[in-house]
Image 1 (cartoon, rainbow, N blue to C red):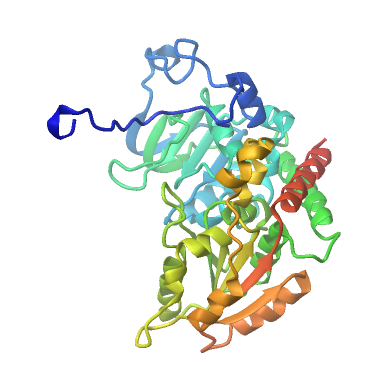
Image 2 (cartoon, rainbow, N blue to C red):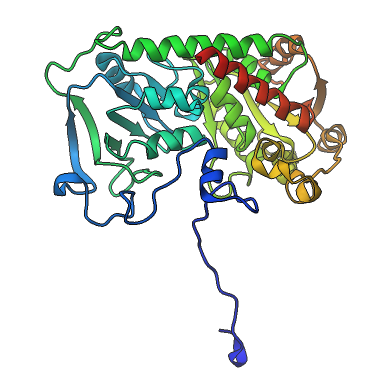
Length: 422
């Protein structure tokens, strides 16, 4: 309460069902999100208090775990600062696909998938390729499909690699084991063909989806947001750093990044993932280049840039990295145009779209930065060539897009992916 006995404000933390739009039943909301409806308490879901079948504990804690022989296994690498190499070796030995978020820096090697978000979004594929064993590390949960995969794994063996004493990430609350490391039981080696072609099936579907999505992206030389993410990560040289903003940039990378090594991707995700992105990118680039690293690029959205625009104004005596800040400017919150809220046009622009009309060229001039606007895919190599020059300083590159057009493109990409899976 407040002074005088008048009741004060009350803060409530409530777990609400997505998609947070009016007049939608729980089943409709789950269907719109591409996820199965969560079971109600007392119906076999995570709220059941009796423990797992057979009286097993919900979660076991141990320094290590030995995983059983299983063909249908997955390695999920979420965001975080950890060494993914042991997990990549585990996947190769077991014959399991690797579903790696961009900022895990684990999307490399023969088992890594390029287009797994499209696979997980396909209800038929997700049902046919449900795993028996999952090993996850870092903080997963970048996409709805990935969370749905984890939630559907309630009967699977799910070993979570702890990030430290008392620290682990289990957003779907399906962990059966929290451990420091895992190993395969004796005789658990699997060939890529496997008895049922588990890894072969994942890799074949991934190649088909990648080809279908690339065909749509390559049909036009205009630099769309998904194509920028794909081409940028392919063109950056070994030893480069890519700082990725929250919201759409990191999700475009998740859908379009092809497996490769030599590129370090950092992201700032969390409850306040939009805060300080410009300053953080500059700091990351300074540290990267001070330790001998090469080119540094930040991929930001327009709202993320404007939210930390003061970070561009650096005092004359302060160090400056060689950093190219590439800003996708769709004049607002582009991610909301891909969500259910876009179906309510009257309040959408003011509450979710939030157009600003800011002139980024004027902002660059005010901060004393070099500025360039690009609109075609073939302009990107010149931008990156200038970025890699020592003493280049900080530059601002703007790629303008429109929110409705990009939402429609993403829908076409999803449809092409689904058709290729079928």
